[in-house]
Length: 293
Ligand SMILES: [Zn+2]
Image (cartoon, rainbow, N blue to C red):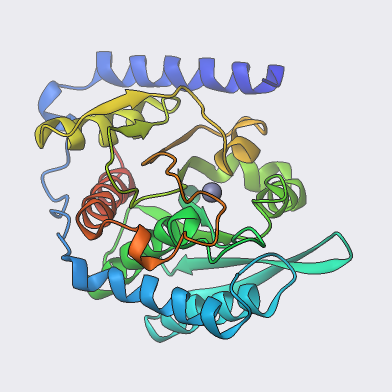
């Protein structure tokens, strides 16, 4: 971990302590915070069907540098544009091919305090990557579309990203964080990541433990539903690109399965019930963190 990130975390912890000392307990939760919506499987699984169709049409995968990846970006971008997000493509080069991160901002909220959620949209070359990580991408898209449907007016600014070339070593998210100015990095209060959200025969939700508010948001949500979790510390996916830059992170994953990085990682490899629960956990965390405490 970079030494400046320790400094930053220390000051965040001190700030929290000061706020707790100074404020009455009842003020911790704003009375006006809206309850998060709850989605059903038919609001998230169609996105996985769409990504499967793209892979089927484009040679069986959605990997960096392929038509399958570009069509995946176009699908998600079109849905976000229709819903009123400001979308932009962040370009990078890897392995001789142009890569794309899709960034989507929800208009409004304090731009000095950004809540950022992301998932990688690329697959490996060997298969369609529907659980890894169409499932996280679909959960993130369903969450963004709920923000739009609710016409959410968050206190903090909301940004979403679908990363390219994660399977090549977190290349897209790494390039994005490198291209941020120091001031823009400081504006990100927390980054949440979802890498696999619909694993079949799930044993437990693997929860990132770093940012205290994000950790509590996920752990409390799963605990309230008696769903088992496991503390993976930081874990390893695109949030590491943010964590290495001193940005507090959170998120979860539903774990590996026998079709990981294989041709059988198709839509049939995703459990709709787990995918729906994961999406609702993400929605609840975004709603909670978007309201300033
Ligand atoms: Zn993945």
